[in-house]
Length: 283
Image (tube, rainbow, N blue to C red):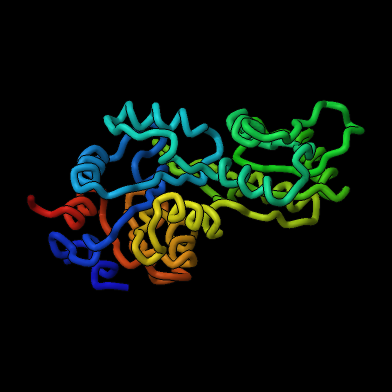
């Protein structure tokens, strides 16, 4: 960990190491916005990246919205991105499933409609019906704001019956305007307890999203920086994949959490303006 990870106030302006990065991957919730509210400095950050021709990717563990909806959300904040720059845990889960199960597999979705849309669009996977006797080949779990006991029972029954069990992510919490709300990990925990099985987790802190991201950006891992707000997902995932990592203190993890972190970030910033100042500096 560099000196910047010990005290954000001591970060030089600009930071030479950060300016050597050829690409950036940004988490979204808690980094660029909290709930529906943009965080300060988001427009200046992306203006700086664009002016300097630095490519970036937005990667979120959230499975409740499609890439198209994130394009609209960023536009509302004054940042123009296209769908190719958006990676969700749902799109990463779809890519994973394409190499793991039959092309016409029957999938039970436990999540919001956007999760199913991203899993089934462009694939031959089949969505299961309400028939309790229908064969289920895989259970895919994301954050489900309408989770019920009936969904818990059907998912756990299918998993005990041999269905592949995949989680988009296992985040315990999700940043919100009013604080924190339960994340997909709370749903995953219930299903795991009921089924007696643990899922394959696609999203951060696993490395699939990071590796797909740098492949898309056309850089080597050591040439990219993962920027996130969670030590246990964003920073850990970036570290495992070989990227440099930067923690912003606008989301879940805070400075005292560094003492017990599994891995330490290369940089720590109070917020996006501090990151932008260290990245681009004057001129």
